[in-house]
Image (cartoon, rainbow, N blue to C red; front, side, top):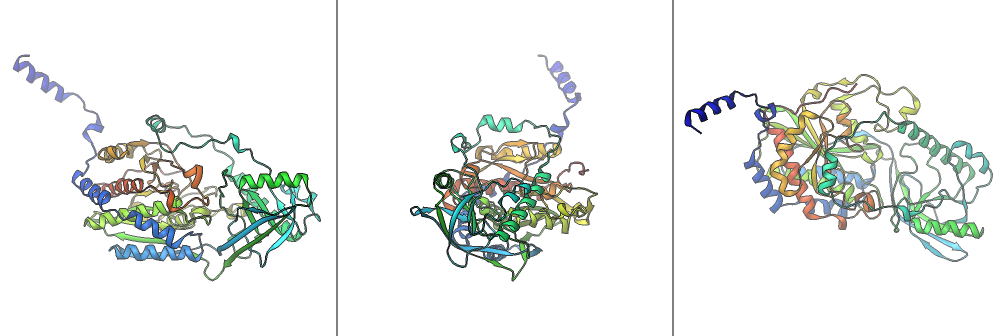
Length: 525
């Protein structure tokens, strides 16, 4: 092509409209990414942190002495790493609860040891109690009357048998195909009646607790939702002072429970003995969020937050749910502090408690600092956790609402980060894609506009703040460790937690350093 024609073509190309996304390519500080990768991949402390939370402190049921120990230990550790303003923020919770031992066994017609766990916030036994078993089916309050006067001195079997042969195990890791599918937007539904169902379940549980207490039921046994001898720990009584907790409530390994049902159907003389050492603690009805900061510089009044929930259930040591997320979040600020980063915006870490009871800690924090909706007037709504309440009424915004750039959360097990949920925020998607680009070799490359629910970014999102949860590999989370007696340090994978720390640190760093705060979605209606 002649030189004059080539020049003319070049001029014409320069005059053509250029897509806005190309002109506004999000800058990425690759030097900072290099430094984050070097510190995070080669000098990680994440396993030391998560081991202390799990092995040394152990289960951290909200309100318990161990949960409060974990809150104070994390506060002190963050302060020791040089973070500023490390403190605990209290919120009203209720009674503490813990258990130290449980034994359960069939005693007649022959002795059969049972693998069991008490439900949280149910009482223990002053001494071993023994009685005949009786299967009851109470699916609504109207089912109660048929059993009146028939349950005294009994140990009740509350569930029917479950056929676990049809259950499928979840895949451990995302594949290229499943990540591609995750990128496709899922149309929102027309809503569901989950709040109505939850109110019904809460009312039924309270009615059963009251009825079983009046009937002088010795204890109740229920079937674990998981097979293979795994016990899923869960709530059962009440953490609200003065509320009826019912009799001791135990979860029994599914296969043993099914056997017990079959035995009881054939032989009415079957008896069970239980001994549960559990105790309530009313000495301090507060729980605590751990807060600490790396102060900002020229934009210090603006804030980038990151966090995870510190509380757990009591079946094991809460490793994947969610000491892993807490250790990663702590590792993020350790890395940034170690590198001497001077962020433009203040970086604030929050380790929540009360997540397992409905994200109470994070909801309280958001309402106290950023925004809230009016408290519901319906007594049934008031009885629900903040997470389950129907969100009605105008959002009451506080001055700090305008100053939060983003909140990044980690709480889907111990798997590596594969990407991030953009929560229908179209404007942040290309920003996140740019931040992920130098991390593709670590396996993090997916941005999906889908929502994901069920953890501590939700209180932020519900009041119009940019709150995000990362996409994580499943590993054995939902299949084996989530809320179970298998949720221990042994099921954490070191390389995954190290990778997650580097990815999260990269996001937090860039959010704190970019010229503008992250774009927001329209305010919720």
